[in-house]
Length: 386
Image (cartoon, rainbow, N blue to C red; front, top):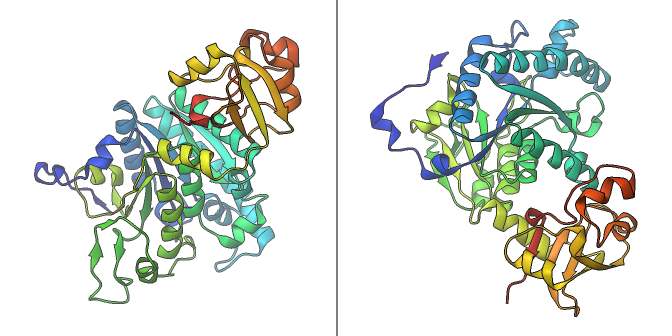
C-alpha cells in the first residue's frame, strides 16, 4: 500500500468545501480495514488513518466514523467458510468481531490523545423519530466532549440491514442526523467514472457532481467484493440522502495510507456538492415536510428570545394544545395565536404541560427524571420571520 503523496503543488487544488467543513463523517468499508487473506485488521492502514483523524481533530473539526469490519473480523476468528454466510452466521460473526473492532479504535485513539466511543445503530434508529433523537443527542454530547464516535450497524440484531449489506446508506443517514458538513466515502476507486473503470478502459473520471440525475445513476456500477458488498450504486444512493440534507459528499480511494490527508492535498476524488448547507436543509425539512401534532403558545418574552436566536425554554410557554410525543413536530405560536414557526419538541405532551412556566432547573423534580433544559432547541426549529 502506498502513502498518500505530499506536495505543495497539489494543496491549492483541494476544494474549499473541505477546508470549510467543521463536522465530517467518514465511512470505512470492510475491504479497506481488513485483510481478506488473514482476516485481520490492516494495522498500518488504520494507524495512518487515525493519524489523519487526530490531525483533523486538532484543527477543531468534529469527526464521526462509520466503520464496517465486525463481520469480516468475526468470521475469521470463528473459522467460518469463505463465501456468503447464513444470516445467523453473520450475526454470530458480528458479535465476535465487534469486540476486536472497538478495541482497535479505542487503542489507536488513546495513543493519539483521543477518546473513541462505540455506537451501534440500525437503519431503524435513524428512521423512528424518538430513537433518532436519542442517537442524535448521544452523538452531539460525545462531540461536545471531543470524543470520536465510531458508529457501526448493530449487525447482531439488524436482520434486514445485513441482507442489504452496506454502510454507505447508514453513513449518509448519520451525516444527516448530525448535520454534518461533509461525508467521506472511502472506496476502492478514486471517485465516480462514466462507467466502471475495471470494465471499461475508456471510462472517464467525474470530479464534480452538483445534482444526481438519471444519467449519473446509470454510471454507477454494482460490483462489490466478498467483504464489501456495497458498490458504486449504494454510494450514489448515499449521495441522494446527503445532498438532500445539505451535506457535501466525497468519494475517494481508501487504498492509500493517510487517505484523509490526501483529500487536503488535492488527490483525485469526486465531490457531490449540496445546494444548501445542513442547517438550512434541516430547517426546511422541519418547516415544510413534517405534519404538526400540536401547538405551543409563548409569552412575549419568549417570542422575543426566539427571534434573537435563542432556544425555547419551558418558562416562556403559556399553553400546550394537542397530543404529541417526544420528537414530534409542533407549531410555535405567539400569545395571540400567530404562527411563529415549527419545531421538534423535546417532551411528550403530558410532560410538557407539567413543566410549562417553570424554570429548567425544576424539570427533574417535577418529572422525576433529568430531561433537556429546552422545550425546543434552536437547532430543531424553523421560524417564520416577517
